[in-house]
Structure formats: C-alpha cells, structure tokens
Image (cartoon, rainbow, N blue to C red; front, top):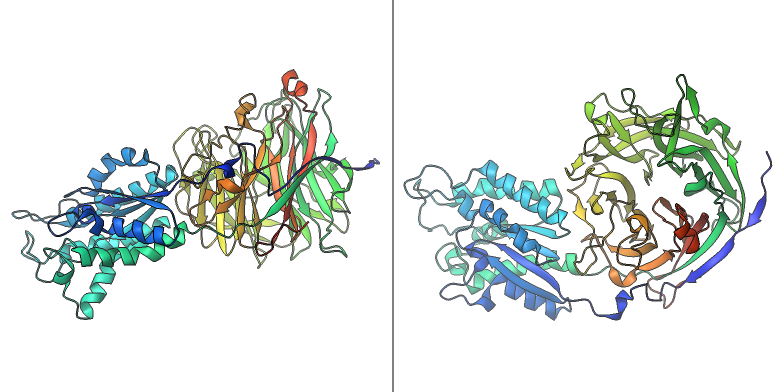
Length: 620
C-alpha cells in the first residue's frame, strides 16, 4: 500500500519568553513557608531564650539575608510525642508550607520516674515518623527529618537511673533509618552535638538545663540546618526555550480518530541535529479505550514532511476463538542505541466484539513489546513480557509510559501493578535486559502504593542529572517521586507549583522532558478556562521543575498545545536532538461542541526549542 508524503501545517508560535494563559509571572511569588514541627526543643522559648533566639527564627533571618524569601513558623509543643504530632498534622498541612522540619525523640524515648519503658515504643516512633513523612509528601510538602540534640553528660537521670541518651540513641538511629528509607533530607543534630562533646565541648554550655538549647545551642541547630535548607530552596537555573505547534494530519470521520501518537528518533542520520523520526499511533474506534492495531508515521527531514500512517501488519489484532481480539494499546517507542533497534512497549488487552476490555482469564492485562529494525523497516510480532510469578503482578502494565535505556543497554520500565483490575494499583520500576530481539525481566524495585480511588498508575520515568524521576497518575491529583538507583523511589509527593498551591493536574498522564540538567513536566490542569473539557485535558502545558522540591516553577509555565474543544490527555514527550524535544498528541473529538470550538481530530507536534541558560536569548 502506497501512502502519500505531505508537509505539516504550522498551527501557532508560542514564545518561551511570553506569559502563559494565566500570566503567572505577572505577580511576585509569596515567601516560601517553613514550619518547624516538634517538641519543647523546637518551641524553644523559656527563661533566657526569646522567640528571636529559636532556631526557626534564626533560620528565617539567615535565609532572607541570603535572598531566599521565607517565612518561618514555629509549631513546637512542649512535651509532644510523634503520636500527638500526627493528630495535628492536618492543621499544619492547611497552612501550605513548602518545607516542614520534623524533630522528635526526646519525649518518645524518655523513661519517666517509676516507669521501666519509654513513653512510646521505638517501633511506634519509627512508624509515626514514617507516617508523618508520607502524609506531608502526599500533600505536596517537603519534609526534613532532624534528630534531637544530645543530652548533656550531667543531665538528670531518667526512670531507669541512667543518662537519657542511652534510651534516646536507638530512637536517633530509627530517625536516620526513616530518612534513608523515605529518601528525605536529614539534619543530624545528635551527631553534631556528639562530635562537639568528643572535641571537648561541655553541652551544658549549649543548654539551659542539660537538654533544652540556650541561644548558643539554637545557633548551633540553625547553622547545621542552613546548608540543607539552602539546597532545597535555591531555584535551579532557568533554561529558556521557545515552543511551536504544528499539525501533522487531521481525521474525524465518525469511525475513528488517530490516537496515542508517540515519537522516537531512529539511528543517526548524516545530520545529527536533523534525525529521522518515527511516530507510532493507533485508531481510537469510538468506544472507550478501544484501539486498532499499530500504525506508523516516518519523517526523514525532522518532521517537515511525513510518510504514512502505514498500518503494521505484524502488530495488528490477533483474533482468538469466541470473537476475542488481542491487541496492544498505549504504546511508547524508544530507540535502543546499543542495538540500533526501536523497542515499542504497551499494554496487552483483550477486547470483546463490542470493544470492551476483558478480564476473562488469568493475567489478561499484561505488557507486550515489539522490535523495529530501521534497516529492514520490519517489525517483530508482539511478545508478552513475562513478569514474576507473584499475585501482585497479575495485572502488570507498562503503558503510556516513558522509559529509560541505561548506558549498559538495560531498560528501566515503569509499571502499574495489582492483583486485579478491580483494586487500587501500585507502581514499581523493573529492570530488563535486551539482546536486540527480546526484552527480559530481571528485577524490580520497591513498590509505591496509594489506597485512594484507582491508586497510582500510568507512571512515566526519566533520568536527569544522574537521578531518576517518576511522574504518576491518580484520579484526584498527579504525583512525583525520585530515586538514585533507577529501581527504588521515595514515597509519592503530590505535584504543586513552587508557591505551594496545587498543580490541579488529575486523572490524566503527565510526561517528562529534560535538557542538560533541566527537568520539565508536560501536563494538563484545571484553571485554564477549560471547564468544558473532559477532565480538563486541554490545553497542554510545559514548565520547568525544581528537582529538589519536585515542584513546577510557575513562572516558566507555557501552553505548548492550545485548547480548541478537543481533549489532549493521551500524549507523548520525547527528546529528538540536543536542540529540541517534541510533545505529540491527537485531539479527542467526542461531541459537536468540540467541533464548533475548532477541533478537527488533528495530530499535533509541539516542539520545544531549547536555549542556553548562559545565553541572553533562546537558540532557534
């Protein structure tokens, strides 16, 4: 079958230096709020210690002097334990801080006179700390765990007749463990005070009573906190960019819409800045999540002209007895540089004759892959990626997912998994080997879960500046996570803007872009005069991300694909060259109102043209 070759149509030019739809750069960002949560050591105020002497007041003054606009709030309560802190966490979250320092242990571990055990067991203490961390992250707030300072050697003995440090030290170690296991920052005051003691410092000179810091002690606490807080609060270099949007094709005949377009480069051409490009796409058959076999578009001139869509015979439906069609949907392709092949990964689904997705047999919802050889222009048939024999992988999809190909050729695939389609999903990342023909599961990392609505699903993964970032869909909001080894990630954190307000992206995919050390998110959200769009799935935005706090930098937000009545929720994002990245999406046209507003079933390419942060203007 011969397919025409045609030029794309420019849609609109959107400059990276222009304001977005809501002009977020028109008003200054309010000061970032830091809340200090803790016991009487955090509260600080006592005879000889004024509010201005406390560590949170000192931190506020020092950070503002450094040009980091912050507001410090002291929520220390004398005598408080971690279980009591949990009871007032909702009120703290309502104040929308960017950062919360959490310091407990002295009261949890203490053995009262006449008692033989601590006020709270070490297991309960660790569990409470972890719950505090997880709840703050789920609210989009960055926790910083801090160990309590050391008691002085001549402090009054506890109920066991011992120096309270002996009972406190296991709790200190538990705090360190929670920080390590959850991937949040730790400020280790106990270690600092212990080191000072070993160097000859009498800790009585830093306290009012052998435990509670005096002004000198609070200065020590604040000084140790500063490097961590500065690292979290300093904004990354803003990377300038321009965007332009183009129409590749239009199709809205009432029978199908082209859907799920996602792009990958092919092996290098003679011009490294103008690579050959392949887009995979499918027909949406006007029944929810009912898709045809795979087709492809190809371009040899960086998307100025295209050939296709060409149906791929090897990747069509497979008809089973009883009228069941087996297909693969939600496909993402990516070039595997070491082999020169393209790996396409998607969700294996079973359709009834009416187009309904079936769960009519064990492991009906799994992940499949196919391999494209650019030299022969041939695809292999779909093959199922076999996952562990564990009920948690009865449902195991890597679908609509960006994945990472490591320098050693292994593949990191993000999955959403579960025992069935009827319970909340969880997210994990699997490492797979690839020999040029077959993708093989090798191991997976920790599992992130959220028992809310459909849980966590449709994750996308990227590597940037030697760290790994996940963005994850949930029915109520989007979440993010970060890890250092590609397999293990800290608990999910809700997406917010850098002023602490909710990003308002929900029940829709988000995807990543990266340029140098700059990290970017592509997403949809509420609040863009788009209440008429299903799930607010248009327009498509792109913005730079603060990689330390995992927040979207509001002043960088731009519309990359404008809204004109159709929804834009099922899209792809990919690096094309060192000069540009693409966002590819097709309009979902589900009613006449969408058509009246201008939707035509178009397939768009949104180009992000990168600039140099050291340059005065973006590079075209």
